[in-house]
Amino acid sequence: MTTESNRHSRGRIGEAIALQQQGRHSEAASLLRQLHQAAPEDLIVRRMLGALELEAGRPDVAAPHLAAVVAARPEDGQTAALLGSAYRTLGNDDAAITMWRQHLSRSPGDIRARLNFIEALLHHGDVNEAHAEIGSLPPSIDSDPEAQLTLGLLLHTAEQPDVAVGYYQRSLELRPGNPLVRRNLAAALQQLGRLDEAESIYTDMLKADPQDAELLRNLGTLYKDRDNLAGALGLYGRAMRIRRRRLGRDEVAALERDPQMRLTTLHSLRLELEQLEHLREEGASVAELDRLIDDYGRVLAALHEHAPEGRRFVLPQEHYGLIGEAMQRLVHHEPAAARPDGVLNPDLDFDGIQESYRDSGPGIVVVDEFLQPGALQALRHYLHHSTVWFGYGKARGYCGSYMEDGFGCELLLQLASELRERLPELLGPHHLNQMWAYIYDQQMEGITAHADPAAINLNFWITPDEANLDPESGGLIVSRREAPREWDFDDYNNRPEVLDPYVSGDDRVVVPHRCNRMVMFNSNLVHKTDDFSFRPGFTNRRINVTMLFGWRNPG
Image 1: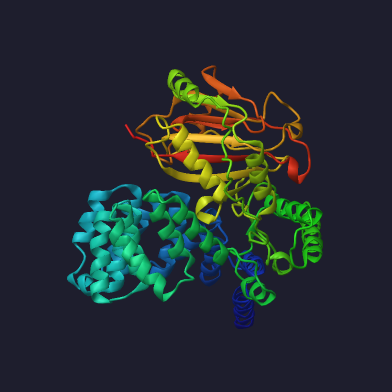
Image 2: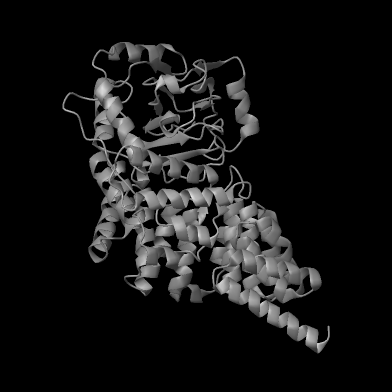
């Protein structure tokens, strides 16, 4: 390469760096791809391109670029760390372990690389070798608060909170008051059931920063673990109002350079627009509602045929500037209050429900006219008028609202309490451990086969029957066969080739959708959303509410 062309190349790299610093990552990546085509051996370009592709969520594209740099410059620990991250995201632990072994054979004193190697071993399940590596770390580690924190995090992530606690405590001895260490120590103690110690840390930290949404959520989960559901939902709601509040124009401008803030899906944007239009029809008081609806319409029109359907993508900056204030935000909220006349239909035969569940074999019962009409209407109003559908990323076209992210109201609290009171044999021993609602895009699909980490799953539908175009479908398919007790969460949620036969054979129960119908079943039963066909329109969208009681009992 001539001096002039080399200078030109370096100038173009400078352009790419400037674009990246401005948050224009896609443009920077496009420029770097052009430079890579012109000069395939340029390691500076390949390293930058690999880092950008990794940041954009394309580890498969990033890995070859980063691997080429590491092969040519084995001493480059920073690029090796990026490559290790790409391998980990791809689930290629073997490649990560091999890469770190090679790196450490050349640079045995690279402590950061040793810690990365330990992380790869733990992620691969090589626990004994990982602990042997920890044991062979130099004594100086014992006096390094950052290294102690890192070891705590690695072991905590590897589901060894009992061991992680010691490293967190040592890190705090060396650097008292470190908020990150305290936060993680409290989380580990909470996981170990040492709730009083964890609560003491959370409470003390919240005195210093009462607007820390993550701390509020953690403390909310602790309250939930204590079966203090009202306290938990109160804290989750506070966290939601902080994390999900509608943004001001200046805040949108400050965040629009961050691609993570601009992540969305087309079905989520369609839902947000439809709900805003519904709020306008209902006369809800929402600031600048007409302008916001117009902006959403412009954005969706511009994205038509250009954005991927059913997959996350990064919204262009100019579009985020228009709607970022409301995207996945609490624009409007009308929670449902508790009802003096109760929530559950008083005419239900609750003893009969328990008997039917017990006599069904695996544990399943279907109940119609589940809620009182007024309670049903109040819950429907809450979910139609509250912009709480923050779970935007489900690939099959549904959006979620989760308890930890503020889903819940006094009416749902009352429902959980009444259920445990009226079904004492089934639900009495189990507190509510999770709750969510899903709303579905009529053009897409529902949830694939899975099981849930609970003792009993309770699911009910609130969409009017006239919205359902096929009364024989649209509900739930539940297998009568349980998922193996030895399976962990990943097994019974991420193995479609194994789980699909459970819900496609003869040994299953098909429960058609009906408004106000409840299905309660053993959470270890594999289940999935049935095919559905609902009328267009926001209020015709299929909505289900799910409550999980107790915890799964592994074999």
